[in-house]
Length: 439
Image (tube, rainbow, N blue to C red; front, side):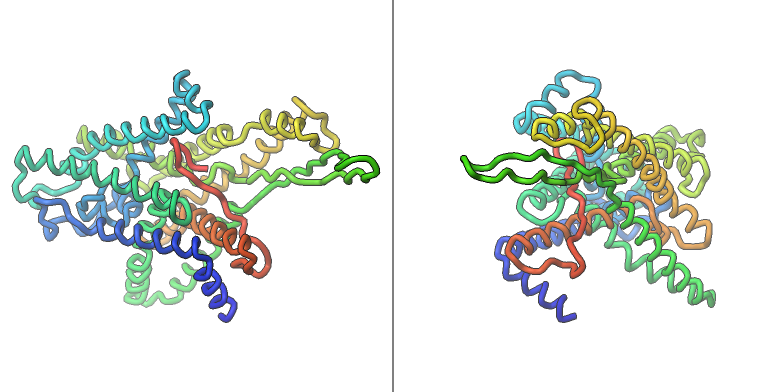
């Protein structure tokens, strides 16, 4: 406890870190207040008290704003969808590929296009959200002017959330977009936990609560191992002479290339979640039961498809994030080589081979964790609490928390203070949604 108090004091002493944390907490507070502001013209007392299926997942990501018909009901998901589309277009459209290679100027252009695409997506999603989610009896006076103003409010709400996320990333601590999603998820955890405890207590199954908590902690542990798992490839740098005549040559330096087991972070699950929401919207729009198998989050086909899409996107996003050829060229240019492997193309092939081997178990494990909530619900856990037994919510929480703590620790160590962990540095993950990507 004494060490914890000292760490908090050290954090407060670092002026830049203190300002960043205060700004981050302030913007998060504004975001949470906005999630409780109901759209004008809607009677909150006549809204449905709970949502099921994928609607519950969307409500989880928005901190309940989706089910409360808030001005921030669409949350940040339209922006993430726009980012996904821009990344996919980067493989098919030469102009976007050129912008991706133009450095900072190209990134700014892609960001602007992503924002415009976000507005377009919101313009389509907002009317669908109102007509499919808000019950008719909750509408006070649905005039054409009300529809136009409400759709505009929902679009403005998403753009405001996107602005908050970008400000947190630039001037706060942690990745803003990911942090807002995490805050929305954590907002529902206390209520879900107490609801689960209440139901189990009424049924006299107190022992099951203990079992659930043990399983929950084990799943968190496995998720942390997945996020932090690294395969280190040894790299040897040649000797070099420093200074003029008479100086002794430096010894060869040995270093490592850290390849993460899950290099893609949480993006495969976010991608997959966005894709799996399409059948729900299609079923609601066409009033059809043809997509029923893909809208039941406890069903076999939904979870099987969800896991397969996650595995595919894990390989896809890893290929985007890591370029073995570029790594080999940089290593060769700096006089480095992998012991026993020839520089150049052989090094690129070796890195690609290692990356493929560690990505497969990482992708499989990611898919298994993603569908664990379905098994938890089958075992009798309430849907609200089962969402935290794995899936998107847990992976996002673990990844973002580790990343944020790692940034805080970096500030402390750079100011010659002790880090957050006594046993060593926190192995966080730098994650950014910028120009259509999260690393």
